Image (cartoon, rainbow, N blue to C red; front, side):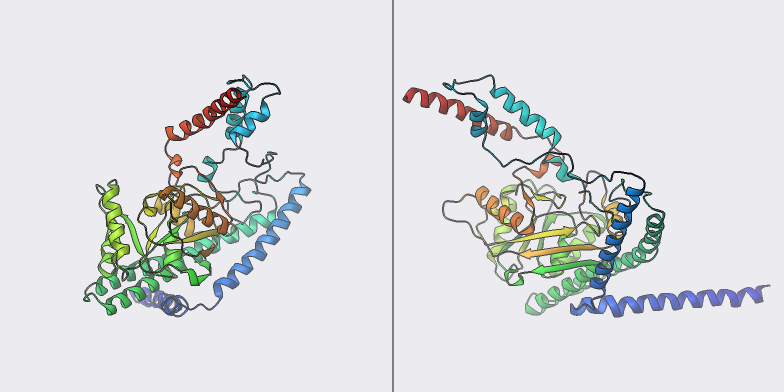
Length: 451
């Protein structure tokens, strides 16, 4: 009996060995080697175009199936609310008051605040930025829209085939690439860290970081289009970008080298941080140092003062926003007084939702979603460098940079703090509305006294 099992076991082992050899050979030839030299065979672009045609066909089938079943397909932004042009509080108060002398206080003023409160509840422009945006058409992912299920038997069958492809082929491939990229990053940066400081070490560090980040980008099947590369950040400056996802880092770092800023972590992240800082002067803060604004500002200032060091990469929003808007920039990175290089990042949600809602998903669950999506498609715009103008404070400078990023990326420019994702509205915002209304009343009384 054993004599018959032994050849069978040997055959199984041989087939597994051949499979692994072929698997890693394909990875090496088509992914790892191109990542080292920064070239692409165009396979991902062809894959993206094929997906677009598939989604278009699926949308037509979905609409046809809905008509046959007399179903109404829900589409976002169909709440019937007509957006109004922004008007100041003073203008709206004066419009609501009827003719005659304007008193210091009018009962009709109450209706203005009631209406604004109802509008905020019905069409809240803040909290909806912390949930995934819903698509008008289905991209064959159940997480995208729960209203498109069971429209057509063909679509259901196609969705099932997509599940097999994404979880049976793409997910194992991407996990392998992710471990390869992270493993090489830890090993190679540790080796580069053994070299003495100098041009050779900086050169090797740049090449190692670029290669490893490009492998990690391929682990997400990321298709990135970079625009205006002549404006790429330079040494001695700070690169600021809108923040949608943790993968924003590797999206930018696969096209250029940056000095990262962050808090010291434990576990696997701590191992990666300690290895990276050996090869490149990244800026890691201890938990007790993060809240010390003066210490943070000093370390950032010392870094940008040395033009031999890489530009610092910072996301001033401080939290992830859902790829539809840019929220308030923290002023800390704009107080340093160096050149700021704005970057706008915009993801295409048709292929996969890159937004990380940290209140709902942990990092592992989020990465599983990313690696089981069809692809990550995004555009990156490098904007011209900006500096503080004479008489401009840090807050005004931050708002000017934020507005430029929002305009270039086609995002809504919001003044609200992203910290509202987990906290309550600050008293400062309430007091600001009270001051605006008090100016209306004071202005009315002054006009009356003059007359």
